Length: 375
Image 1 (spheres, rainbow, N blue to C red):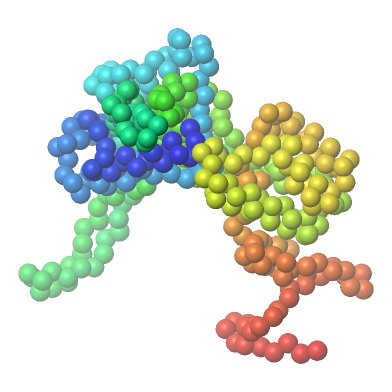
Image 2: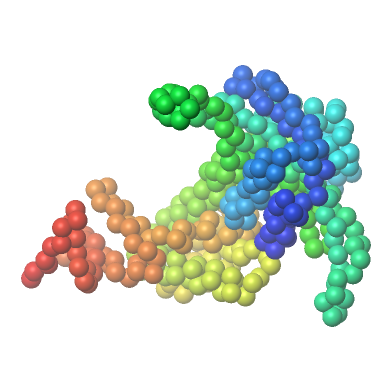
């Protein structure tokens, strides 16, 4: 799925746009037991409650592709004949009316998900009429209905008792603590959506925490390769750079790479490209070459990159380097500036000692007190 496809489905998760027939769910306690189940026509839910549920569903379709949103691929054999694909297909084709499939689905989640405390599982089925358009931009009749399921797994938190005031009794009293369903920790959509309809060979997986792989969940439910967490990709890139470009890895090189990534991201957004921006080993070579790295060093980096990520791998800019901040860290000091001001920081060796130099134009404050910098 590309960004436009995901946004198209996400926009459906509004009270006036969705076509959700039924919602099912269950409350799982911290002992991994179902203590309550929910099976109801979505139209029978109050407006306020449906908006809250749709908000949780939308969040499982949010974030960056390659970071919070990861593609799960099924092999040809899985699609033809496998328990995992058959279960998801039964849920979808039955519009969640297959009780045995729903029970099996909940059991798989409960046996594999790693969430501390209680949580709630939401499961919805939506049907989307896909329209074609003529050369004049006029909408034609619907040619296909895209049916899909979305699952959101949301931790449950206990709100703290708090002091309140009763107007009727004219006295202070404690407000009873209650349970609150929080934003989803993970979830998925099946099948994936493309412009011409369903792609039954893919699912879209969501994780709130980009450092978690949710290996047990993905293995149990999809029996698919585990997508590499975004935070691990960032660490791997840093390790490859440290191992191959260490002699050329100056602050100027990092500034150059970050500036190029920011420019590529901005151009991609300006051009309104449907496909997410992904960078291959060849693209990384270009970034390094522009930063002044030697060709033999670039060759070593490329070799390690393909060895670590795969020969045809491509990763999003955010998984190469943080493009929203510029941080310089020593054992004793951490300096943070916005990326567009990174040139204010330089490195120098003075009388054999290494220094960070920060250009200090304008007012300078220390603990809120303006100071003077004298020669």
